[in-house]
Length: 110
Image (cartoon, rainbow, N blue to C red; front, side):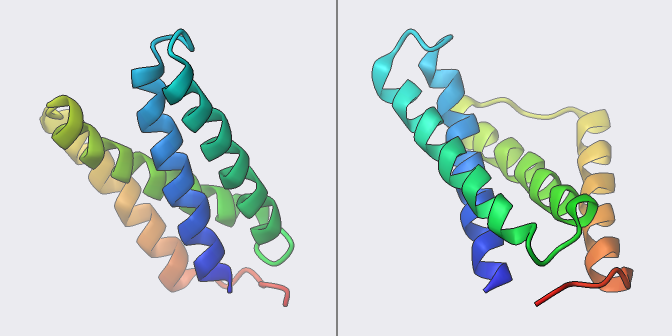
C-alpha cells in the first residue's frame, strides 16, 4: 500500500508542478485548479505515508523522484533541456533515492 501511496503522491506532485508553469502566476483558472487539486492530493497521500515511513525518508523519496520526473516532463513539454551540471545533479539525486531504498535500516511502522 505504501508504494501505491508514493505513486499517487509523486504523480500528483509532478502534474501539479508541471501545471504551475501553465498557470502563469495563477492567472489562468484551468491550470491553477490542477495545481491546487494536484498538490492537495499529493500532500494528503504523503500524510498517509508518514504514518508508516519516517519523515526524512518519505520526503527524500517524494521530492527526489518528483524532481527527476518534473525534469523529464519539462524536457518533453517545454523543451527545457538540462545542461551537464543539471544532469549530474539529478544523477546524484537518483543515486540518493536508490541508496535510501536499498540500504536504509530505518524502521517502517505498519
